[in-house]
Length: 316
Image 1 (cartoon, one colour):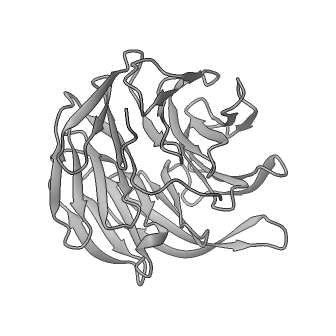
Image 2 (cartoon, rainbow, N blue to C red):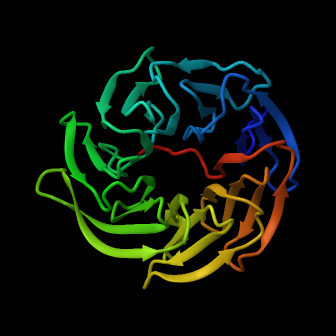
């Protein structure tokens, strides 16, 4: 198979992963995933592999092959894997699980290389653009920064006691971090680099974005500049787009019939893909908030999506 310029994948409670032609909406490949549901999908920076985070495994699939079998399995978590991502040149992967741990995996070696204890179910993990800090959010409301150089937790904060942190997102330049919780609130901090590499959080804004759960929050990518947006996907069936200049509501994306679990920006920030319990994924225009395409094929809730429509990174 030749490598597609745009890789778009979704996963569903129907135990399948589907690959889609973004423009036509055609599903061109389906992978059966019988062992568990898939909680999160992530594409490697070089577009070669798709990571599927399940319960309790992470499986790596070859994007440019028709093989239904994974090329690699990562197996030391003991509960749902809720977060997965890659270091910018694809040498290692990170994950977070409801087993209370954050792990790091060298893709060129078997097994887990590092493990950090969060002591509560981990819902979300993001990698700081400096590539040396992971930020995790858990079910007890804790946000922790894991310093990979010092191999320890360098910072800990609790924005709202006993309110689960559902999703974290970091601005591409490392200047902001946003945490979304089960009460529809987004906490925004400025990230200040200390004298060491240790990141300090300075409270910037508290945004009551939705009345119900926020299931995903996401900051816009570098090529979207000078505009800076925050997308919040919610159990109220909508996705809201907030302008970070004043934290004003720019648009509300209306069309999904049930919870919206996941969203991902195109590389230039001009489009947004969303995944919903209504079994569809959708493509939206950021310029007018209109729905452009509906991806139909899953039989049950579509809970995660991954998109890579950029070029391969030359180096990071």
